[in-house]
Image (cartoon, rainbow, N blue to C red; front, side, top):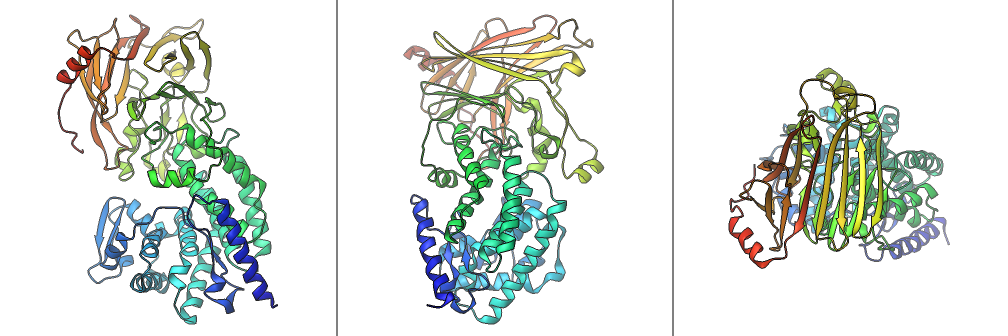
Length: 584
């Protein structure tokens, strides 16, 4: 038996083993030796792409309509790579080549020819390079896409194009290796190392590069994935993005009959429970630190790899979040300081903010971040006022880089100052669970500490809270103004109406359940808000607001209670506002 035949057999056997590791997911890696048996010394395997593919989009691409990031560009016979991009997000999606998976899903001779023509167009015109094309995370996504979609592009082509494809791919990998020294920290740096690991595994005769790439990836995973499974950026979306690449990478190691590095396996094992930690009853993710809407089908695919199906943990001390589950109610609270400045470009000033849901209905949320047009909303979305927590003197608990020159130099607007001391502890009491937390984000500027106590009843039908502002021991409140606002942003599906005594709000959920918000000692306002993380873009919603002065009333008590009286429910439905939920 020849070496090539032995390698093909071992690759096929390893591929079957890898697919058995993820029986609930779709098929695993593809052995390219079946496509090019005479060239197994070059590109020998294609990793699996877990991201959702839509075969109907292949027809749009063939017709010259490229729809990315909420924008549409039509070619009209010109090269799509020559046209001016409508937004940076659109351009990043185009140059990342992830759209090739839609052509592969259609799996016709026409879509294969279209894919080859588009890739050939890009490879043949390197002179039209754009700055974004050279960005490390975009290049990393392009490398992974070209590797995973190689069966589509190379399925029935000739040797000339095959060599051209490999030269273009090798050039991208070479540039990617050079970029590791000057790459943004956080998820982009991990994406580059993941792409290099894929490249070493998918190309033959790469034993030395496999060892190097594996070592660098292992070191970075140990640094960025915290012991409780959260990412160092504290963004739940980072888990979805990284697991979408790490799970197929684990499978690719197995398909090459190479033991995955322990750091990779340990990181995946820690991240899976964290993925469940941030989910509400409707499957959506809590909106903290740059989180937007997550594709439900992709999340379902990722969770299919989790054999434990365990109950989410109650606390994540290293990442800084707490979760309280009682009955059908879920409360998720941010109880951690901001992430390190190098990974805080998307971090929010939402310390002690929370999200509250009952069953499949979300009630209290944070505004979140839109999936497209993020730059337009970024300053507001990152502010404390966009979160369900206390805002002192209309100021955020964190401060961000504001000078444009510094933003360009630092590749964003990282956090420059924020809470340094965030304390939290929880205890079980007779009728429920109590979480007590505090932060000093307002201490240096205003001389006050924010303390929040949250109590969830044992049956999940009541949430009691108390927010207080107090000076540090031996100190006093700074300045003449001590105004603050307590905000509770409501999900757009919740219909809200203020009670006649102005001390409460009736909330009607989509399933017709009725909850009542009450603050007996303070006037309650119902104001406009915006939910940024909707699947269809930003949507109008409402927020409950209580305003006070810390010198007159340093503590506010409030509660959310599920109403059991049918008469109350009928009254609430009658009084609830019926305005249509118009997109912004």
